[in-house]
Length: 586
Image 1 (cartoon, rainbow, N blue to C red):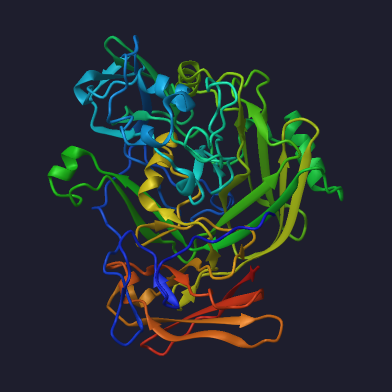
Image 2: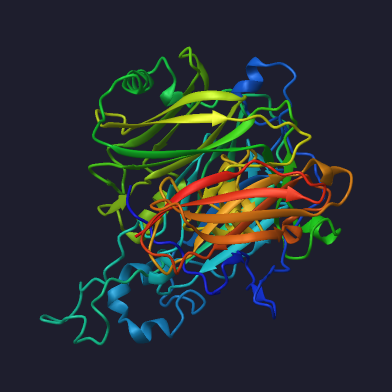
């Protein structure tokens, strides 16, 4: 898989906690932990609450699972004036932007901004569930002005969450937008007109609205239609329907065993053919669950969450008899990597992951499909932007999860475009057991491009009231996205994430420490050794799970292959086994 450049972090310490705020340094030169910690909400019962889907739970009675439901149905809406203004609002097109770029170079973006209305608010919206108007209990407006986002796009993720998994574009995946010369005087060049000819990426001015309401009770498999109206305006929604979970399995309709696509992918999984699609995958085992809580303005006013906070994650430890949560990250490269924006051919992507026991029985699986984006919101945006004939790159990544009991598995990952192009990856997977009484450490996630956890709200909007899949890996308000292969440039830092499970924290406070080492695999020498470090500022109140995330200082290491090892110890003299992960510096 293609090499990645890790995100550049500013501090020169060997270990820096990642957070929205800056890290501090003590006078001794040792890491001073960022005081900003995770924001916790009061526990709330989910609407239509149900447990996480679990293959293991469906075959083993009495295994504890955990709910992960949002409390609201959330819908993203776009709203446009039916007649464009002569000039766009300065909130959308700041005057300073056009000083560096001539207006004709951004014609489509300016035309789109003229249709947006900055004056409408919550009282202008009316939401209907199966034709019955609902009380809007959550409302958020997001304004994106026209600006140069070239640098931002190099470190920003883009996601398409689905009920069975989350499709994504990693940072830098999009080809940068080249300023068009349409409308320029004959013979003109970018340099003659006073701006750079290098590739630049400009945002499309936009206003989106997230609308939430408490849904009526639904039976399993039941679906409701959603409609939103704003007087004298056109409205487009990211979805016009939501459904309650219909079954316990995690395989979507298109990749089911009895379908043409599903049968072809299963046959390919058992073959020795490599296929035309390049696929890489990694699996990570955890013994925790994440519960997402969305706090409405009314609830915030009653003090259930800090002011300004509308998204909160609570970490729950899984019971010792519960199956492990296996997060599978898959990346793939197709020979052809784009779709026509109008989606006339209705192309699609499919990913199927199966975990086989030694007797070749399937212990767990998930499958998901993504069609060329064709929501009402996307269609209206294309119409106004007049982008019907352009190309858009499709995702090259899917993150999903399954639940497995202790044991050894043969994990097979198959990717298809629904036609004849296929690719696969195969990897061994060992799932250990969680004693529930011993100090343990999860597997280590290396994450070249973490992001602010607040952005996970956008993922929640797309699937609510169902849970986000997979459960986000969050530490200190930062979400870590696993690498399938970790290759970083010299002088860069390496963000990583892991969880410590300390059962003693359930009844009393105790000191928990972590110890990190980095080993050069060429000669076996230890090139970094942190010694014992307190985990105090990662500990969550009355919680036995410690989600740890920070940046590992690797910027002075030479090119080569390395291994990072992590161990946890506590004041009671107990020590976990060492966990490890490999990475390459190029």
